[in-house]
Length: 142
Image (tube, rainbow, N blue to C red; front, side):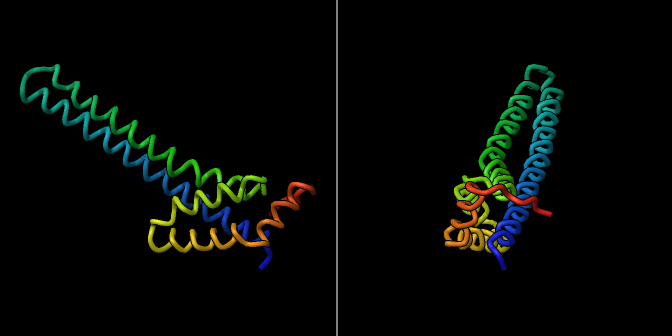
């Protein structure tokens, strides 16, 4: 297999993980927001004090901020690695290494992708591929 094919497969793999992370965090954020708001409303109805509903809204805001933070930490690096690898940008190797570390803890597929990505990013083929993409125009990938 050529370095360009390895690069393409890694870009697709990181894109899949970025999409899975993003959809998972979006779903968890919406469910958590709904649970906190529902708990706040039911607690306010139980006690008769409508000010108690604010605790549910505050918990919902915390859940949204928490999942947005997780998204920035886990989705952004994998998405950036995928995009830069697909376009063969010069910083793609660094983003690929960082994204490999982010997906390594997802056993077994993330671990396999991380091992493959680290093997490729530290290989001589990878260095040649990205150095040649800086000096020559890149052909369009199919």
